[in-house]
Amino acid sequence: MALRRVLCRHSLSKINPLCVIVKREAHGSTEEVTEERKYRFDGFQPHHYAFLNQDINWKIFVHKAKLKTFEALKENQKWKKERHDKLGPELAAAHFIVGRGGAVKLLDRNRWIRRDHTGSYTLPRWMMDNMFVEGIDASYTDLLYEGLENLEGLSELKFLNLSNCKYIDDFCLSKLQMFGDTLEVLDVSGCERVTENGIACVHHLPNLKVLNIADTPNVKQKEILTIYIEELLPQCIIRGVDHVSISQGDTDSLVHEEMSSVLDTNKFIEDLVRNEDVTTEELFKEAIEKDHTQSLESDRISNDFDSKLSHSEMDKVKITS
Image (cartoon, rainbow, N blue to C red; front, side, top):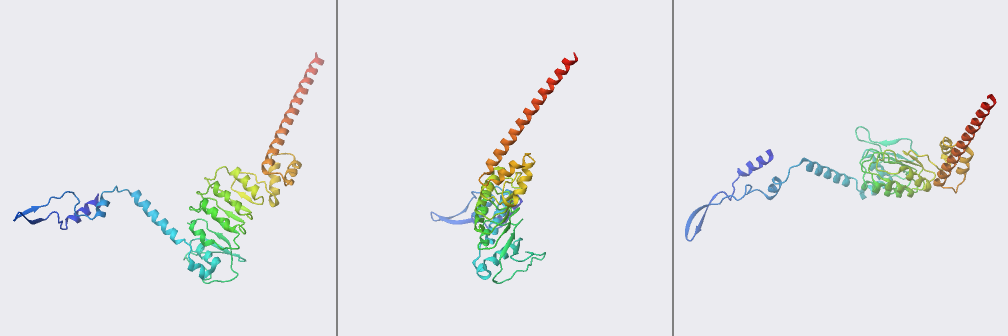
C-alpha cells in the first residue's frame, strides 16, 4: 500500500492533460471546458497501471527470483566450444568441475584437485597430452543435466560421485551411458529426484563394480531393483539396500556368510552358488523351500519325541500301579 501511495503522489505532481482547463471553439464561440477524470489512474503508464492492479504476493517475487537464478545457472553450465578447443575434453571437464565446487583426480596422480579457500586451484591452462581425468567428485554441487555435456569425451573416467546433488534426476542418469566402457564406481546417494527408472539405466554400464543408492526416498522397491541389477551386472556391489547381494567373484564370501546365518547347511549354499546357470530368483526360492522343509522336519521330530515321551510316562504309570 505504501508503494501504491508513493506512485499515486508522484503521478499527481505532474501535469495531467485530462485535468487542465482547455479552450475550444464550438459553433463560432469560445468556452472553457474541464475534462473530468474517468479513472483514478488516468495518466499512468500502462505498465504502472498493470503493476498497481495486480495482487502483490511475495511468493510470486520469490518464485520469479528462483526461476531467474536457475536460468542463469543453466546458462553458466552450457557447453562452450572455445573452452574445449583451448583445453581439450579432459582438461575442459576438469576446469568445469573444479570451478563449480567439485574435485577431480587425474590418472596416475595420488591427490584430488579442488579449490582452496581463495577460490584458486592448480590445473594447466592449456591443452596437454597424456593427462586424463580418472575420478570426479561433484557431491553437493549444483550440477545440471546441461552440465553433463561438459563431461563428454572423458576416456578414462572410473569414479563418479554425484551424491547429494539436488538437480540430478533420471534424465541425468540416462546420460551416463557415455561412460559405459570405463565407469566402475557410481554414487548417487542423497539424490532425492532419482527414481527406480533412473537407477535401472545402470545396465548401460557393464563395467560397474560399486553402486551406492542410499538415502534415495523416491526409489521404490529397492530389493527387487537390486535383484534386477545383479542379474544384469553380477559383479556389481549395491550399497544402501537392506538386501543380501547374490553376486559372483569377490562377493562369494559375503554370500556364504549371510546365507549361512539363515540356513544350517553350508553344502546346500555352496552348490547353489557354484551353479552358474541358476538365477538369483531361483536361488532364493530354493533356499526358502529348503528352509521350509527343514522346519517341517524339525516339527515332525519334535512331535515324535513328545509322543514317545507321553507313551513312556504312561508305561511308568502302569508299572507303578
